[in-house]
Length: 232
Image 1 (cartoon, rainbow, N blue to C red):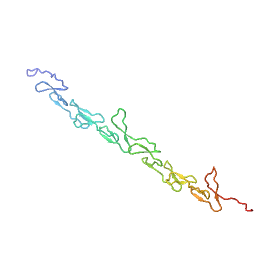
Image 2: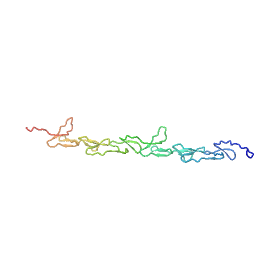
Image 3: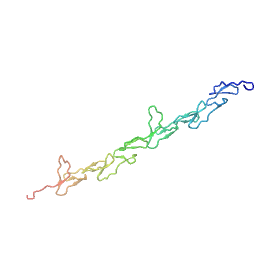
């Protein structure tokens, strides 16, 4: 009892109501809550980017991969281009670095959160700037960086460029074709010419002639001469 009056405890719901100046319970507005003495409504001051103001008037932490919306009362995330971007833990987008790409979305996934890189077979493939593998074309192979294809420079007199991109020596009796990617032999007149070891035709010297062709050796490669009976 005080000054002849009996004090009674307020019957207000102290979690959401205050006792106003008319000694009546009054519900706090949304986004506010009663202070400690229960006589006024207050609101928390939230941390920018990581917290939002809940309808209770108290701050709550934004979930991972989101940040505080401009109204301060909710959280949001950026809309990323998942062909090149990933969603960071702070809710913003980040473009994957060169030679990486966003991990493809799974069946129940809505956001890509990791940049990955393909595992290439570097004997035949290179890694592109977009993070994907690509096979080198015919007559090329991966260079030292494994990010570009190259071809050997062959000696045009006797080497040709193979489909692997490496140079090899043409077999005996052949020479590189005009495109440098195969070996050919000249078409000789085998009545007077033979096919030389360099793949070119050669006229037999005087008093010799091309060795006759056979099924086993259809191309004449040797000049011969008859052995005569000088006693006749």
